Length: 330
Image (cartoon, rainbow, N blue to C red; front, side, top):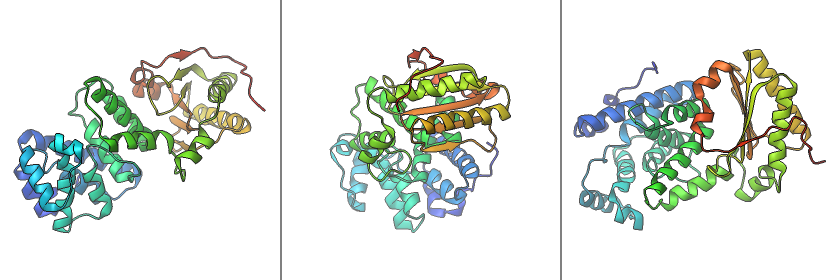
């Protein structure tokens, strides 16, 4: 990530607060700022807003619990039961309130800082990016971090959902109760992708009844095989994540074939009545993603597939046998 990162000195109150953090915490914040700069450059977002959110997100992270509770009270933030039990959760709301006191950052920056630890339903792109950056910056050490990072840089919505799921699984394994905002964000990210007006409308549009989702996955796989796609896999995601019901993963020999495979699969699924939420990656065509909500199709060049390694990231997902000529509903 070689993008230029705006320095915190642009915002003197933030720079002064950063100086009071430990060296390790400052290093983490700098890595988050570098990640946010890369994301902003790739997605055409405001680099200064991305940088300010990154530099500010952990300003209160090293405050003692009693001090966080007192500062939240001073700033007018009423802690909920989870924040009272674990005051460290207040470091985001406190830092966001500081930005407001200092007259720095607009609502999007303050929202991102406020919810970077718990996430929240309905947050904007900047908040989603900061939540991801805090989890996947290169200083984090856990299996699958790199794959999550690359996924988020390629498609923030998919990456955000995947990081939410991975974080929730991590805390559940340790018996930690998830904050209600996190649970609500999980539900919203899993069910309301694509800007649907309501969760119910999304469920009708992209969560088909019965076996239709599996039929769509089989249709996508069979179409890929018919058009010389290679190493076609179907992953059953239902036991492991809310991201989707099925992933279909396909390789093409060249970027030209990847784009052509995507066109053929999209045409077949559209004809079967599947509702497409998004198509991304068309520019470079080394990875094209077709998002049908319940079914997500990933078409890669061989090199890109090895690099992103989704099969390893979702190694716990059962594999389905690919039927070359699936039956589809009229």
